[in-house]
Length: 257
Ligand code: CAA
Image 1 (cartoon, protein in one colour):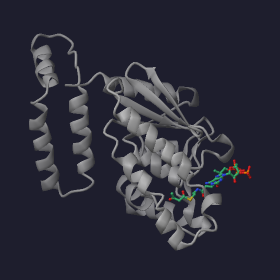
Image 2: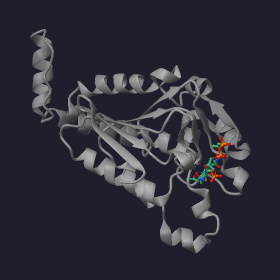
Image 3: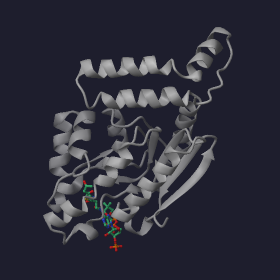
Image 4: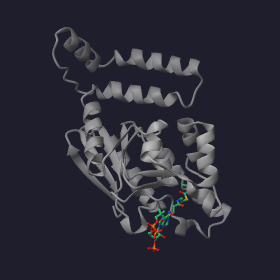
């Protein structure tokens, strides 16, 4: 892979995926996104991996889709290339993905961070959808995910002006999980990942699915989906182990079965 670096494991049961296109500020070219999709698919199928951390570097998470590669495209070129189809695959990753963001998370970079399940940011992180300044609009979920996270007024302001928000502001509005000093953002992401990696992988998968379903369905349908997944968890050895360990006052040893 040219633009993606995978470290597996980076910690026990945790894999790190890092963008490696620093000269272009990790601009999300179709090649980079295909590599990301392939890396995530491989990690999703690897039983030793329980949580994935996705990062850029200290200066930039990602500065958006590659403007230079899109600049002279026609609508039909864009339609036929359908670059966001890759994103649909990434969205289907079953294991939890934590974005560890430092510096710019702009345009597609912000959208990709929001596609992840949780976001840990450094104090230097900034989030924004500046597409309006180059004559377009977010195309990889920004208008939808930002609005769900921040509410209409704030999202509308960001999308229509291209203004960035700081990590502190993003945390205040619930867009991200936590802000930490820049030297700690990766460690903090690993810490969160390690807490999740200790849980039953089966239950984590079912729980992730159920939380994500809340974005796609009515409350009634979401509750129904949650209940089915709750009952399904009782088919796992991990449920027996978890409940027995609780009763026996010991730590559970989850196997992911
Ligand atoms: N695509 C292609 N190249 C990019 C890029 C992008 N999104 N962002 C930065 N680069 C390139 C720059 O062109 C520059 O290349 P050269 O050295 O060859 O000139 C290099 O990366 C460094 O960038 P800057 O000199 O601009 O760095 P800076 O520190 O002065 O500014 C920045 C940083 C504020 C992030 C600025 O680069 C910027 O505004 N980038 C574009 C952000 C943007 O508009 N993103 C949205 C893209 S469209 C999109 O994402 C659609 C979607 O919904 C998926």
